[in-house]
Length: 548
Image (cartoon, rainbow, N blue to C red; front, side, top):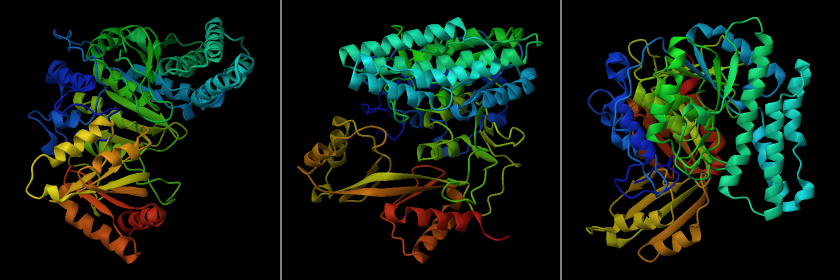
């Protein structure tokens, strides 16, 4: 069944377009170029012959119902020339002219690796766009106001002592027209919202290119903005989410071929520094789509997989993936190396450094990822690779990192019909399918099913869901729960479980649910939210703050 990354529930065995992309990538990339160490992944239970993640891993990403296009039927041409480097910069790394200049200097230091840039919107521009849309919807044409959005870009060109470029002025006029339309018709559809938020990335790449070219005026190679659909980024149709990683659309298989063809020129002559929009794409009908909040990570890894990049670098304002949230535990520290599987589990279960869906394209193509700090570019950050190898970090306590989610809903379903009866679980999940509900973690016994829902991905009609389940069972719903996940390889799980339960027991914290064994690297406990802060601190102290 569907697991938490998917936007919608899917019929059993039905592959999403993204899953088809994964399968196509495995079959068509130049596998002969891979090193054996890049093809070996961390978890043999989740691998197929040849070291690629199995289809069961891919189908954790669910898809919207409807059109599922066929994968390309012809092999892509072999890639020649030097590999490119994909560099993604997040909004916090682009917030002001000082941030933009720092990012430009970082790019310059990697010019010999032929960088392809993928940018998010500058600072909080996406939030400003959504606020402007809501304001126009609620208050009408007279309330249409883009001054806060415009101010972000104007500040940059004032610092450069340059007039606003004509293409950026054209975008502002278009934005004003769309907001006026929203105000007039009193409607903001998912398609219109996607078009509105796309202005963040479209403004960002043009502004960054202007800053880069101003700083590097004497350089032969200049930066050029590229809207992602010009390079071939295509998705299924459907509106993205304004407030979570949830999205109704997925990258189409043919996008990989188109991206590969477009970026082939940069493996040969590198005519300019391509500055590509993250997060946004177009569907086959030409409508703008989005990949969910923070979807620029996914844009970067899709491009990296399509072009067989030497590496995908994700530049943020933190020094890599941390052992836990440093806002809660000041002693948290960067993790030097993670496997793809470990990173996927971390992002799935709450770590927000990398978009949950962004790991898979790089994993399939064997393209390493690094998470770096744009304010401290000399810091190595976190490297995400297929196999830790002999040089991997020594994890004496068995745990690589922790992630967590709050505001979790736990549902306990009890029925005597389960005893020796078939079909009960099938019925339960048919109900979840009917209400398009994603399940995070599940545990079963002969007469009980316990599972958790992360309702932040999308709204759930919990009352109707409960009512239908109560036709065949007793249902107990517990709100305000929290989930803590320890990333640890299965061979050390006994030690990890013993340490975790000892730490929780010593502090009077009851475990409401535990999940272990579904993944090679994941141990998850569910507790009451009131104990979350204390539990996180105690577990981090147990596994990461021991005196040597």
